[in-house]
Image (cartoon, rainbow, N blue to C red):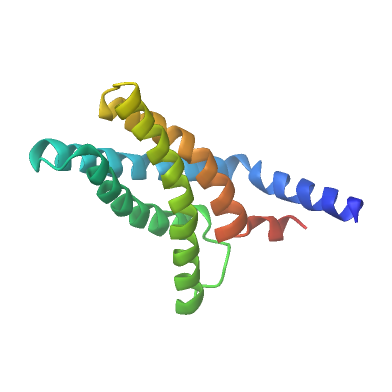
Length: 150
């Protein structure tokens, strides 16, 4: 049992250490972060939405963009392409991203509310922390890339 557990861990680590996939995920994340940041600034500055609700709205828009790009590019060879499988991955991705969002929002709120940091900088820092949670969970849970590593 210990050997199979150790092999399971090694398989998942190998899958996560794909430099090509990591770069693609980071590139998609950069597009998503741009959508998130741009939307947040638009909501807060032009539409006078307060920072935390604005962050929730900007996040959801960026999640849809990120999912589509990851499905089309980063993880294109992972998973079936029929409508049910696509819907399942989208729901998984939203669940995973919600966990990443909670991390991002926690860092964002802590930095804005407690440390008095400007929301723009706090947002970028929160996105950076959430990125690693998202990469790990999206790779292993949503697209299950470790199945190709066996």
